[in-house]
Every structure is written in C-alpha cells, then in structure tokens.
Length: 403
Ligand code: ZN
Ligand code: ZN
Picture 1: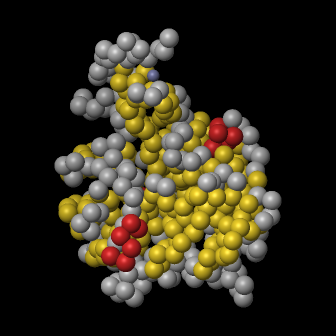
Picture 2: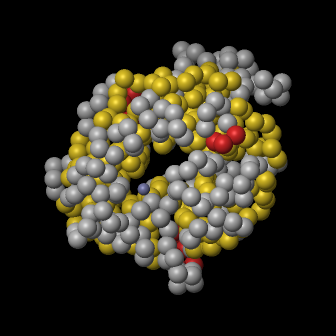
Picture 3: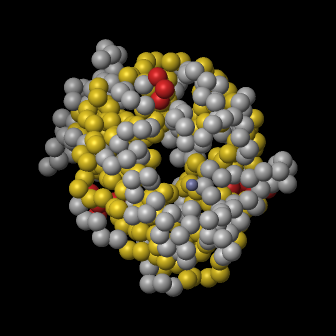
C-alpha cells in the first residue's frame, strides 16, 4: 500500500458544513476488473490501495464491458457461449446537491445468458443489448433487472445470424442488417425496430458496418462510407449519415470509442492512424492522427475530457489531445507487442481509473499504472496469468446518514 494513496474505508477528507448533510465522509473508490487471455476468470483489484479483492471463476476467457452507472460489469465469453454479470459493489446515489457512494463486496451474479457466439454488447441509459453472432435474434434487458436477479429478456429478430450489433432504447432498438447474399460478410445497414416485430422507417445504408460507440446523446455506428449517428426524438431513435470528410485519405473506421463529457468519437483509420470526429462540425469535424506504429488499443479519459490514450505495438502509451487532434505525450511502458500474428493474441488493453491510466501487460503478468496528470509511470500491480481485458469503475462520493 502506498502512503500517499487512501483506501475507501479509512478516509475523511472533507467534513461537510451543510445542515442537511452531517458528518459526511468523502470517499473515493476505484476497482479494476481484469480478465485473463487464457483462463476463465475475472480478477477484482482495488485500484486505490492496489490490493486484490477477489477472483471470479467464469466459463471462458472474457471480453469485459461496464455499464454507464458502473454498477455492473458483463463478461462476454464468446468461445464458451456465456455472458456473466458481476455486481461491482460500487454504486452512486444522486442526492440532488451531492452524490453518495456505496461500497460493498463485488459479486458474481447468478444471472447468466447462454447462447451461440455472444459478441458485441451495448448499454445505453440502463438498457442493454447483447448480440449473439450465432443467433437470428438479439436479446434486450435492463441493468436493474440483472442486479435484481431477473434474467428475462425481450428479443428482436435480426434476419439471419451475423456479426452485427444492436443498440437498445426504451421501446425500440437499432439493429444491423445482414448482407442478403452472404450473412457471413459485414452487414450492409441499420434498421430501427420495436420489440413487437415491427420496423420503423427505412433501413439506413451502412456498408461494412462494424464498430459502435456512444457519446452523450449520440450513438454512432461505423460504416465504409462514414458514421451513422443515432439520436432520439420523443424516445424513438432516428438515424442520419455523416460521410467521411473528402479531406481524409481513403479508408474507414471499424472500431469506435466515444468521448465522455465532450461529444466526439475516435475511430481507427488504417492500422497506424486514428481519426477524431466532432459530429457537430460536419465535413470539417474529422482530424486524422498519425501514430508512430500500429495501434493496439485506445480509450477516452472520462475525467480529463480533452484527452484520450492509445497504446501502440512498440510498447508506447500516447496521450492524444482530442481538441487539437495531436499526440501530446508518449511514454514507453511495455516490451513491443507486434500487431503481426493473430488479431486475438495477448496484447495490452487500457482503462482509466481516477487519476491513473492502467495498461495491461499480459505477457509479463502485470498492470502498469501511469499518473494521468504527470504522464509518468506511478506503479505496477502483479496479476497471475495473462491479464488482458480490463475495465474500471469508481469515483468519489459522500458516505453519511440521511435523516
Ligand atoms: Zn447523501
Ligand atoms: Zn466485432
């Protein structure tokens, strides 16, 4: 444990003077959920005092997704055909003029979904869409129901099994449209449906659809031709197409991440470039960022909102200024992880936990912790096996009794 860091249970940074909030402790808690490249497990680590909290045995190696609330982490085990849910143990409660934090043990929930080739996972405003590449229907449920132990789902037909995606809204979903000649090829568009088997409006063309992300009120799907941007009008999704700028070289995105606090998207654009997209700027809203070598993984910083991080195959972590579209700092962290070889080989993955950027180093069995402000390496945490996919949840809030 580091003396300069503080654990969730031991600190009282601020005493509140407000009448309605008495004897409040300000508590900061961050947890890392780390899956293994080979073993069916998820390790839970307290990112504040750097202690391992738990290890959950699941059915197969997992991709991890956290919900917006941070109360749930989903472990999508594609090869094992199972999706597991973990209650992170950290929750926030809005009390109007302040927020409360509640910290409990993380637990592997009893609820799980079995199906053929579970793949892309999307959560929006507590609604979840879980896609199964081997099935002709996507499944929809709410985070709340899962936390309450309820595994009931709604479904929407997607024509034919394919590697696609569904985006969940209250009473509708946006689903990918499979290639009618060969569903094993990339989807050709997106369709708005309800949960009674009805289509709403016309299909939106999106050749080569792959990759999607949310940013604020917008949800984006990447196509060969540009991005489809989904908004809601009185609760009903609407889709418009934003073509790639003519100023960009030939190419397209197939992986997207979305800004938090600032509305933007970042996509891959060729193996060694990324593109920052400000959807409010139309044709001039695309900024291409050249990387020194090929990209391994990228994330946005939800706290220092103008920055994102990219790890490249030469073992460097880069801090990207999203507004300027430039790399502002680089730091060598790991041995090289060449992008030659299989796409699913063990390579670093990134998460941001409070003031730390966390980089998994699967071949060395550790996590590198980088201070997000100074952009210097702060510490490392050993994790058994090949720590691979990672998500973080947490934040700060008050702990106190309400009258
Ligand atoms: Zn409160
Ligand atoms: Zn995919």
